[in-house]
Image 1 (cartoon, one colour):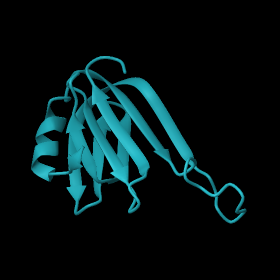
Image 2 (cartoon, rainbow, N blue to C red):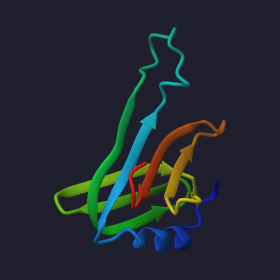
Image 3 (cartoon, rainbow, N blue to C red):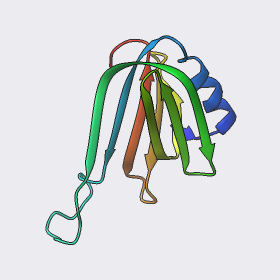
Image 4 (cartoon, rainbow, N blue to C red):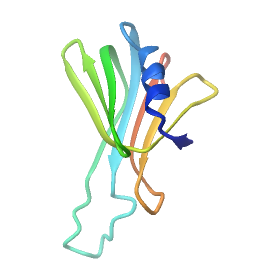
Amino acid sequence: MQQIQIEAVQAALQKYLEKPVYIHLETTNGAYANHFNEKVMTVNAFIRNAKVTIQRATIVGKNPYRVGLKLEEGWVVSEGLTDWEINEKDQLLLAGHNPEGKLAIALQLSHSPF
Protein backbone atom coordinates (compact mmCIF):
# COMPACT_ATOMS: atom_id res chain seq x y z
CA MET A 1 0.00 0.00 0.00
CA GLN A 2 1.02 3.60 -0.48
CA GLN A 3 0.14 6.80 1.35
CA ILE A 4 -3.14 8.32 0.26
CA GLN A 5 -2.91 10.82 -2.58
CA ILE A 6 -6.26 12.56 -2.33
CA GLU A 7 -6.71 13.25 -6.06
CA ALA A 8 -5.89 9.67 -7.07
CA VAL A 9 -8.21 8.17 -4.46
CA GLN A 10 -11.03 10.54 -5.45
CA ALA A 11 -10.63 9.44 -9.07
CA ALA A 12 -10.68 5.78 -8.02
CA LEU A 13 -13.84 6.30 -5.93
CA GLN A 14 -15.64 7.72 -8.98
CA LYS A 15 -15.42 4.29 -10.69
CA TYR A 16 -17.85 2.86 -8.12
CA LEU A 17 -20.70 5.34 -8.55
CA GLU A 18 -24.25 4.55 -9.69
CA LYS A 19 -23.86 0.76 -9.99
CA PRO A 20 -24.11 -2.09 -7.49
CA VAL A 21 -20.82 -2.60 -5.63
CA TYR A 22 -19.70 -4.67 -2.67
CA ILE A 23 -18.32 -3.03 0.43
CA HIS A 24 -16.06 -4.29 3.19
CA LEU A 25 -15.67 -2.06 6.23
CA GLU A 26 -13.99 -2.94 9.49
CA THR A 27 -12.57 -1.09 12.43
CA THR A 28 -10.67 -2.66 15.24
CA ASN A 29 -8.47 -2.15 18.18
CA GLY A 30 -9.29 -5.62 19.47
CA ALA A 31 -6.29 -7.40 18.03
CA TYR A 32 -3.98 -4.82 19.56
CA ALA A 33 -5.75 -3.97 22.83
CA ASN A 34 -4.40 -5.01 26.19
CA HIS A 35 -7.11 -7.46 27.27
CA PHE A 36 -5.67 -7.58 30.79
CA ASN A 37 -6.16 -3.85 31.33
CA GLU A 38 -9.72 -3.13 32.43
CA LYS A 39 -9.29 0.51 31.39
CA VAL A 40 -8.94 -0.47 27.70
CA MET A 41 -12.24 -1.07 25.95
CA THR A 42 -12.07 -3.38 22.94
CA VAL A 43 -14.19 -2.15 20.01
CA ASN A 44 -14.77 -3.54 16.55
CA ALA A 45 -17.11 -3.15 13.58
CA PHE A 46 -17.22 -5.54 10.62
CA ILE A 47 -19.30 -5.51 7.43
CA ARG A 48 -18.40 -7.72 4.46
CA ASN A 49 -20.02 -8.09 1.03
CA ALA A 50 -22.83 -5.63 1.66
CA LYS A 51 -24.18 -4.79 -1.78
CA VAL A 52 -24.80 -1.04 -2.13
CA THR A 53 -25.21 1.63 -4.78
CA ILE A 54 -23.06 4.68 -4.15
CA GLN A 55 -24.51 7.97 -5.39
CA ARG A 56 -21.63 10.20 -4.28
CA ALA A 57 -18.15 9.53 -2.87
CA THR A 58 -15.82 12.08 -1.32
CA ILE A 59 -12.44 11.95 0.39
CA VAL A 60 -11.40 14.83 2.65
CA GLY A 61 -8.80 15.60 5.30
CA LYS A 62 -5.07 15.93 5.75
CA ASN A 63 -3.75 12.53 6.81
CA PRO A 64 -5.57 10.80 8.21
CA TYR A 65 -8.41 11.12 5.73
CA ARG A 66 -12.16 10.57 5.82
CA VAL A 67 -14.25 8.97 3.06
CA GLY A 68 -17.99 9.54 2.85
CA LEU A 69 -20.15 7.36 0.64
CA LYS A 70 -23.70 8.63 -0.02
CA LEU A 71 -25.97 5.63 -0.61
CA GLU A 72 -29.54 5.44 -1.86
CA GLU A 73 -30.74 5.09 1.74
CA GLY A 74 -28.05 6.65 3.93
CA TRP A 75 -24.32 7.06 4.40
CA VAL A 76 -21.15 5.08 5.06
CA VAL A 77 -18.34 7.14 6.60
CA SER A 78 -14.80 5.92 7.31
CA GLU A 79 -12.35 8.07 9.24
CA GLY A 80 -8.66 7.56 9.99
CA LEU A 81 -7.57 6.35 6.54
CA THR A 82 -3.87 6.65 5.69
CA ASP A 83 -3.05 4.22 2.85
CA TRP A 84 -4.53 2.84 -0.34
CA GLU A 85 -4.08 0.62 -3.38
CA ILE A 86 -5.96 -0.94 -6.25
CA ASN A 87 -5.22 -4.66 -6.24
CA GLU A 88 -4.93 -7.20 -9.06
CA LYS A 89 -8.73 -7.81 -8.90
CA ASP A 90 -9.36 -4.09 -9.51
CA GLN A 91 -10.64 -3.65 -5.93
CA LEU A 92 -10.10 -0.34 -4.14
CA LEU A 93 -8.48 -0.96 -0.75
CA LEU A 94 -8.21 1.84 1.80
CA ALA A 95 -6.70 1.38 5.25
CA GLY A 96 -5.84 3.36 8.31
CA HIS A 97 -2.73 2.39 10.24
CA ASN A 98 -1.83 3.72 13.67
CA PRO A 99 1.63 5.23 14.37
CA GLU A 100 2.99 1.72 15.08
CA GLY A 101 1.77 0.54 11.65
CA LYS A 102 -1.09 -1.60 13.00
CA LEU A 103 -4.40 -1.70 11.14
CA ALA A 104 -7.18 0.37 12.74
CA ILE A 105 -9.69 0.67 9.87
CA ALA A 106 -10.24 -0.84 6.43
CA LEU A 107 -12.65 0.24 3.68
CA GLN A 108 -12.74 -1.79 0.49
CA LEU A 109 -14.89 -1.51 -2.64
CA SER A 110 -15.32 -4.12 -5.35
CA HIS A 111 -17.50 -4.85 -8.38
CA SER A 112 -17.63 -8.51 -7.28
CA PRO A 113 -17.91 -10.14 -3.85
CA PHE A 114 -14.82 -10.37 -1.67
